[in-house]
Length: 236
Image (cartoon, rainbow, N blue to C red; front, side, top):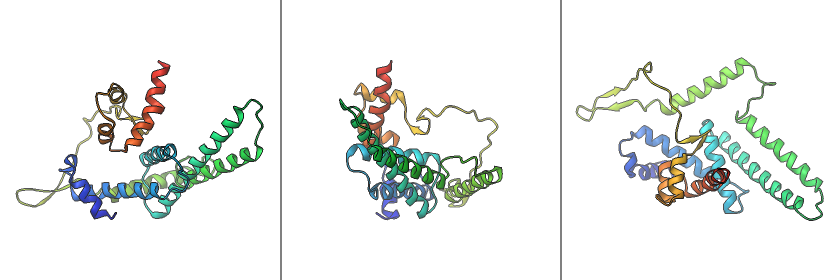
């Protein structure tokens, strides 16, 4: 699917009717990037692994933006390796649960190698802080690059066209009176809201409605429901 077809789909959604072309461009690119990564994963062999891939992708995209094909492909490889690591862990857990467990040393070595590869991918994508190999100047350059990348992708968001005279004007905002509030739709860096999941648990809203609220897939909602809401409910 090309970016124009994706833009047309987004443009037809009621919640997007007031978005500018620049905002639709950004949303369409993000949708296509997600689809490109998820559709090219090689390690997803079942629904659980596909759900895990979606959660990991949402988490990493919430931490930073990925600006070129090389970074997007590295992110795909990172998610593949993390899925593979979980698969090996599941096999090890099964082995240890047997009546007379044996230690599959070759699988332990494989897991170490996979985890080492995961760490290298994360370092490459600047998803971890390598204090031994970085200094203040490098950190500043990284922040500067992120700021410039954000500006390039969002620089049209505050430029509007007057509906009466068709002239362009810029919206500027003063920030001294703004108040910082906790983002109620996030748990750490993952999309989550306990009140909404409580409504879903009580069957007062559907999983499709939840997915629409968060703008994610149904699988993403189900995964967080099983792994966060239900587990926390049991603890209470």
